[in-house]
Length: 331
Image (cartoon, rainbow, N blue to C red; front, top):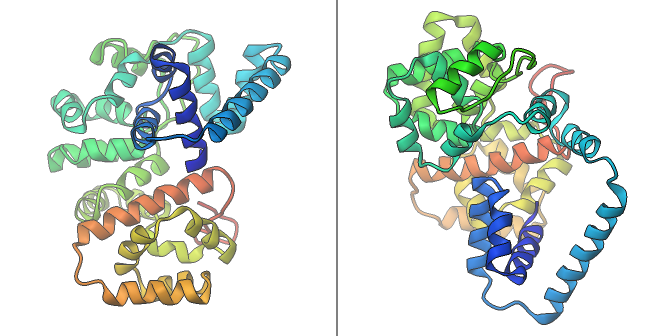
């Protein structure tokens, strides 16, 4: 959802009252709650005309949905498969339609990373890996920063080599996190974990921890380390995006964030960005870069990570494609 969509959702929640808004919040993810909460806090005055437009749009959409959805089970299946792809959607559909409980994992998403790390500190790395793959990569990476080097490395190897989660493993997770996942013997194998999941988490660990993890994996399994590196991409890899894709990314990025991110970018990456801006905007950006004094590496990496999150979203939405090396390979 773009910023305008978030604002419209915030306006709608403000208009329906505290109790009703609270019920809506209960259905949202922690990230969605935080984003909407921040937007509501920022919206001080909403013009009457805009409120009317938002309510009219909501009413129209609600009437359309009411008329269209005759079989809610089939509707949710179709929507989830379109949004998430066949494998991820099938797992989620099982949980929704068969009543499987994921309250334990959902509970972790509301805790601060340090507390989750402490909770998992003495658990077996295989159990921790199974839990990590159920979390968003950015949250998993924050949690793993609190692990010891040995625990972090061992967990990462297990994530990278995890070939799905069997029902028996789901039952183990139930014991560890008070019914984290309710698995039945008939439940299909969950297609979670693997090299791509591990690579996404490593991407968000930061350069120092990233090097440590890859060195550890390389010592025990050079082939696995290479596969991880093949599935990772950094800020400078955005040079593989075509001009149209770069322009779409730039529309989503704030100027201040772009300046900081480009402070640590390769000259070729900077030139790619300049070429996809108007002459005036490019000159302004160059002046900002030249005029900006020394900045902390951590600040540069943080902004680059935020931009990479935008890129991942656009990739998942099918709006841009990033070539990953081979002629027919894409990330």
